[in-house]
Length: 91
Image (tube, rainbow, N blue to C red):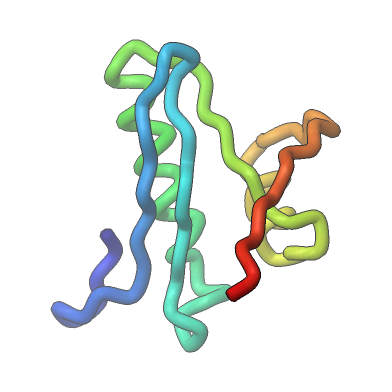
């Protein structure tokens, strides 16, 4: 969790699996986006992953989410080209 003046401005949710760690959710308040909050959260997760003796961190994002793609590529993530099925349920 990232806080500024005791206000939560961003968070990440990750899970550990047999392959390493998966970043399931990264969220930053709109007014804080572009100020390094997401970078800090992912960097903190990378550090904790290494300290745990794990060396693989995965993340999924939409191919049109330019902000997320730019962040992950800036941090050294590599696109795999894999596609995952997305399910919807129509009510």
